[in-house]
Amino acid sequence: MTTTTTDCPLCPLRAVSYVRVSTLDQARRGAEPEGLSIPAQREANRRRALEMGALVVAEFVERGRSGRSLERPELQRMLEYIQNRPVDFVIVHKIDRLARNRADDAAITKTIQGAGAYLVSTTEAISTTPSGRLLHGIMASIAEFYSQNLATEVMKGMRQKAIQGGTPGRAPLGYLNERRFDDGREVRTVTVDLERAEHVVWAFHAYATGEWSVTRLTAELGSRGLTTRPGPDTPAGPLTVNGLHRLLRHPYYKGVVTHNGVEHPGRHEPLIDQVTWATVQDILTSRRNGERSREHDHYLKGTVFCIECGRRLIVQHTRTKSGRVYEYYVCHRRRDATCQQRKALPIALVEQRVEDLYSTTELNPGQRERIEQIVLMKLYRQQAVNDDRLEAITVEAQTVDANQPKLLEAYYTDAIPRELFLTHQRRLNTEQASLVRERAKLKSENTEIRQRVRDALDLLQDVHATYADAPTTARKQLNRAIFAGIFLGPDLAQIRAELNEPFASITQPGRDLATKAP
Image (cartoon, rainbow, N blue to C red; front, top):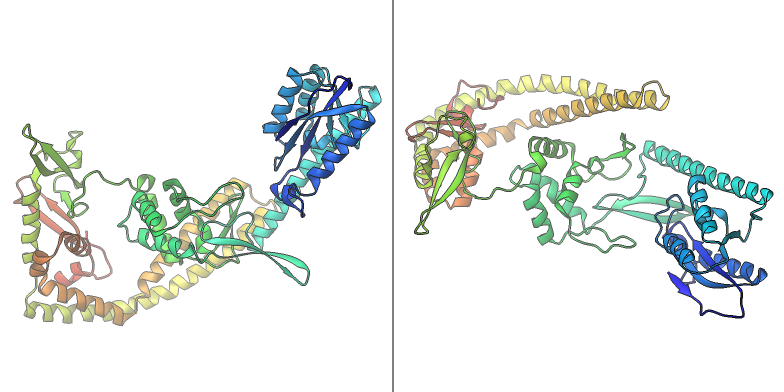
């Protein structure tokens, strides 16, 4: 804010006043509209001007701006003002209001002197005399030391807070920073944001299904009403694609606090379980930029592949001169001529070929009963193997958990350099995520697995009729549930299907149920 007083010919001396507070909290403290510090600095500067027989002709007030940078709007306005108008004095409450390091202080002082004005402090006896300049240099050095020391102490406090599981800084979306007083002592804590947390949880679980791209998920969250938290100067708004990508990568949601690249177990309530977190990270890693939404959609996309090179078949629309549009499936590598399959496959024929495939996948009642007996016997044997592996996983997980605090201790005692520490921490996190996924897979109850097998058998017993009568959305779900991939040749006579579990083991009883389709 800049205010100018009308020129007064009877007042030969002119002064400008510069006032600054570092945080918006300081500008709002107390009952006054401008807080406590701004009025106090303003009054001290005006008194000093009167003592020198000068009139404050302009005032520049910097609200919530750090003195560690020259990029301050009111400071730049003041420097421009004194270069374009006659000014005798630039008055500040203290030298550190003008700058927090010696280089910036020297640059500002040079500009002031170049404009023909004198820098005046209301609390420090600086001047153009040798002793005044010495004091000015000392005070500038003290201001720089104070700023650097404060930054060091703040970083030390934030690091210690993170080590203890606290949240240094603002909690991410889905949480709220709260301040309360316990027996006169201020306690800062983090609680779950009930308005936004349910959307965050849904976003993680939805993305873990593999059915959503980050772009589509962002749009869906917007339609569900999710907004960012408002800040001191920014209103709440819709979450961006980049914002959602950062959210899905943020380890805070699984209960981990990160400070300066170092991870610590947090005291806050995690919103996401370890298995879902690991699944989301795997999907994000496997997709470039979180998977871009495709231009043309069809319920067989992601299910049909080229039998020659194994790449996905993509949808291509061809428009004739008359305006009629024909839809085809073509090999993704057809564009760069690296695949021998050049023929375009009409989508209608591909749809019919896949529907016919279901008739060969269907089971009759006798087959169903025999296969159920074979598969369930295999499940009982597999359960014993799983139990042994679970015991081994428990021991491995305990070893990883025990190594985490040892690694942190080595880092904070300077026993290992930062880069080596981060490498080891990433390795331990990867091992931990892998063990979490394997434990979750093996912990499936035997009764639950048996029920899944029976459900799959029920589906396969009448799957052809079910698929033929199903709408496109249901067909897509059936395809993704049953098939890992359907591979098609150029004339559609060649077709090979790879099944997901448990369908692969059901249709091939000699197959190990714990392995995936080839």
